[in-house]
Image (cartoon, rainbow, N blue to C red; front, side, top):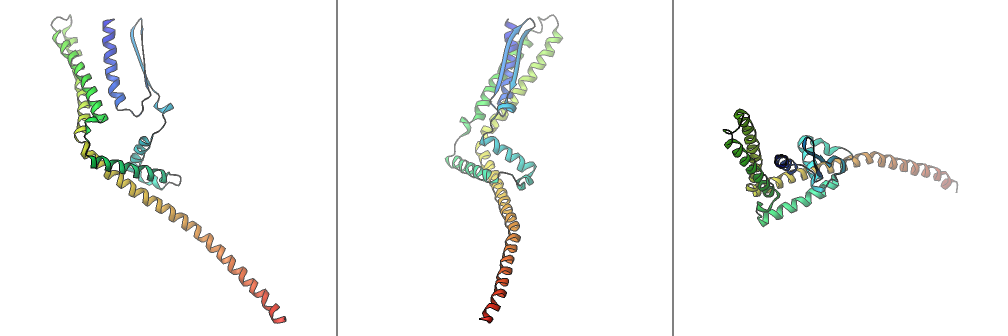
Length: 232
């Protein structure tokens, strides 16, 4: 049972970093015991039940603007919605920059701390495995396992370091995000102006046709009324 608990703990420590970088919070883990040991099954219901938030939709907009900027010219693209959300997000970023808030209370700080603790756990298990290599029946297998455990610990430490780098660059990243939003806002405004101009160009011929029809009717009316005036 003790080895099963250790395996379960290691599995969960691998799941946490994956969930930390995921998009949704609908991640479920089913754990059970059977004749073969521990079963751990994870399921992310993001694709089935995830309701897109404003932040999620803005991220999609950033991706589209970076990889397919012409999508803004699609007829049914929700330009007005993104104009409102990006404008509001610009105000939020400007307020954060003015307030000079630290990144110590950000989600990146929390993720970095949790992943660091898990990395230390794997490091301790690596050290414990390496210290028992001389007592093992097959030292070469223990060394291989130690190398694998050490690699996992290093990988988790690198992930934690990336999160702490985000915390360290918090103020710089706010400025970068603000500049990005301003560029996107300009592109949205240009796309909206082009759309409205296109609608105006499409309506202009119809208005011209109507005016021509009115002119013809007025001319006919004048021609019909002239004989009547002369006769009287």
